[in-house]
Image (cartoon, rainbow, N blue to C red; front, side, top):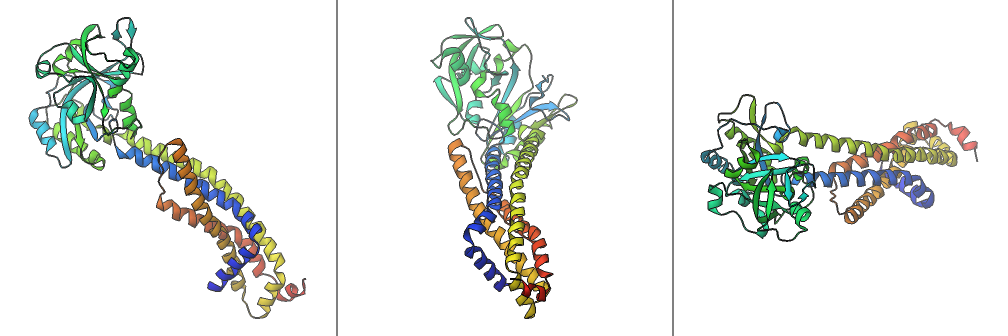
Amino acid sequence: MIENLSEALKGIFSHKMRSFLTMLGVIIGIASILAIVSIVEGTSKKLQKSLIGAGNNVTNVTLQQSGSDDYNNGQVITSMTPISKAEINSIKKIPGVEDAARYVSAQFYDGIRYNDMSYNNGPAVTLYGITPTYFKTTESRLIYGRNFTQNEYSSTDKVCIIGEQMCESLFNNSDPTGLVLEIKGEPFYIVGVVGGSQSSQTSYESIDDYNMSLFSSDSSIYIPMKSFAIPVSFDAAESAAIRVSDTRLMKTVGNQAADILNMNSLPSGCEYKSASSSQVDNSLKTLTNAITAMLVSIASLSLLVGGIGVMNIMLVSVTERTSEIGLKKALGAKRRDILVQFLTESAVLTGVGGLIGLLLGIIIARIISIFLQINFAVPIQWVFISMAFSLAIGIFFGVAPANKASKLNPIDALRRE
């Protein structure tokens, strides 16, 4: 076997240009595959970095219709017992939980006005009714103004804090504190502008994060929970915002928190669910896998072309080395020996092409990630898959030439020039 490998390498280096052109299809195919899966893998890891929230470690547990996995389900669920302090304290005791807070929310598409301007920069605005610990839990930062006072939290004063995007749209990013914002016909004094957490990023961390971004802190309005019924005119079901120490714990923590809240007296047909454990996250994985499979299939066409090139050059090699084959068979080489020799040469040819393709694919993925400012990660399993694939291509397309060489009659072979 070592002798066959040695001869195969000698054959490659003795015909450098021909060998390189033969390997080119394999190199392009493997490089394309690895570049694609590296970019997709890196993006997937980034998406999984945080399961919900604007780049922070906050997951939300909301009341939903049983059997539904839609975030908030677009429905108002009323007539229920509020989340108690005891339940929040129980949630805080879950391993990995750093903080938790209650809130209520509602979404609407109109009714936000400042003077003659209406806010319409997005598919929906979310109005949050928050408790004093909400901003601390979500690690939100004030850009302008101040937080609500304790008196405002405990009363029904018409005060609000708006998000960055709303500030940009209605006030051109100038300080709007002290101005009046009309919310569903009710005047609310703006006391501050809030943005994402200090560690947050503008990129999406999951499919839930994308959904949340449609009505995230940028395009949201915050008012004290006791004032929530003034513009909304109904009592919404309370939800829990939970910040965890490690994003990998978010699904587990969310499910445990949901179990605690589901022990409460709930409306018929409703249950608390963690947004990070919804089926929409699985849909993202399914979509990612489908995209990867489609792109890899397209890139694999290069390998098919490369394999045909390998078969062609190996058939030429058999013709060129007919006398050599005849001499070996005359000296006692068996058909199996000749078969293994040519299969080894074919596999080494595509294997070397695969190695070059792996290095090229990593370089291409890195360049793409730098220019497009996206993540990439080299999946180890795909490194082995790519190498195995390139070797398999060599063996598969080398069978016909090897079989032809092994069947040559030694006498006929020695007679040929």
